[in-house]
Length: 242
Image 1 (tube, rainbow, N blue to C red):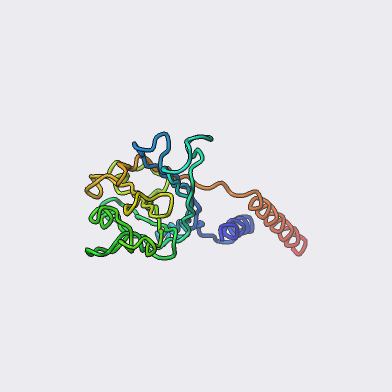
Image 2 (cartoon, rainbow, N blue to C red):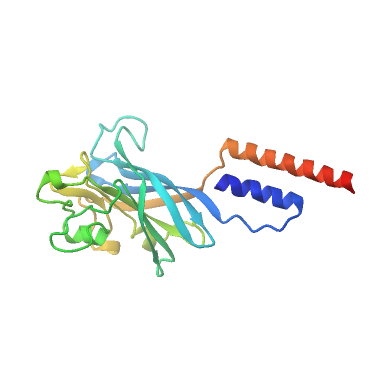
């Protein structure tokens, strides 16, 4: 989609046709949760998403979440040799008018079943997880645990690359109920007292999030050059016709 927008934009500019600014942009995101009990390993979500600055919507949020309780702490920092979960299912995007942006969540599974609903709650939001002490969905039967995990990021709808305020950082969250990231009946989580009333189940909490515009792939440039060549060809034919 982005490639088509780039080519269309180049064609319109050089052919003198009216053109609206491309609305859809791909961004990369890195979100870090400090884990005091598993140092030097932290929980890190590394992913990407697309943002439409006309409809103000985020789509295709996906990426990898490290499990800080795994690995031996060797290998290159900051990922070391931790197991990483592939989160590919964006199932929630909620606008927060106070924060001025979207809280967007992507999951390991294709559903939101994360925390137990035995005492109520929606079974996945950070506040619901805090309320049940991080106990997994399907408790008390281990076999009933779907092993879900998620990462929640914040996207400033005015400028996705803007540095986050502390209030925005406070609303970031993650949960990991997958095998390897569990502590018995309790999922690993990362939250703040200011955002949700408690720090994570292993004392983890969000410390940073960085969003950057993705660099176009080499084939995108090739397609643009091809489009410009076509524009030049059309222009030459027009001159000859005149």
